[in-house]
Length: 243
Image (tube, rainbow, N blue to C red; front, side):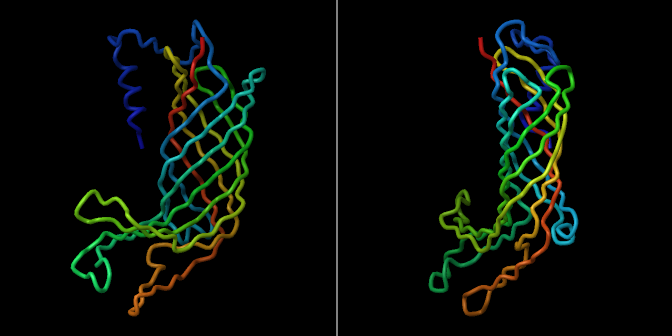
């Protein structure tokens, strides 16, 4: 998935008439310096592996990273990652209640995963293409949440509830490449890569695992398997430049 920022960056690179941008591929700025903090945001796709792949096709979402590059050893850094992934939705239009059955609302049940992690990163800090590898440990949270919104307006939810959840320790490793572009105020890079996320055994729901009962209640039928997946990302990295 190509983000709007990536499209804008490509347009700038293709337009030599843009004045004052001073975009230089793979170069260092002529004045000022790039700070130690780097911020990433981009699209994510997770491909289940092992037993998890027999239950879930794939998941899509968004992720962000905060990285700190050691001032005296820019090849070494510490990174914190946060990703949100959705692997299924179930939408229905239902009456607000049995007694208010002439008012319909949109009910959506979403199956989501949140992953938080922290770990070291090792990279090649210079050059037009900069490979990197990293390891991490953290927490992964699998949850199914139902929300209700107004079907006649913008659909924003006015009530929600978590139907089922399970979380625990996660760990893994990953890598990728960055292609940097130096501009006036920051170093911007296109970041493409992936990582293996080991979650161990989790219990979770997928589409159809919540069954509504005639008496107005519902039952859940969780699945329990290993829940490992490979995450792929395409992101934009921004390192502010200081004078």
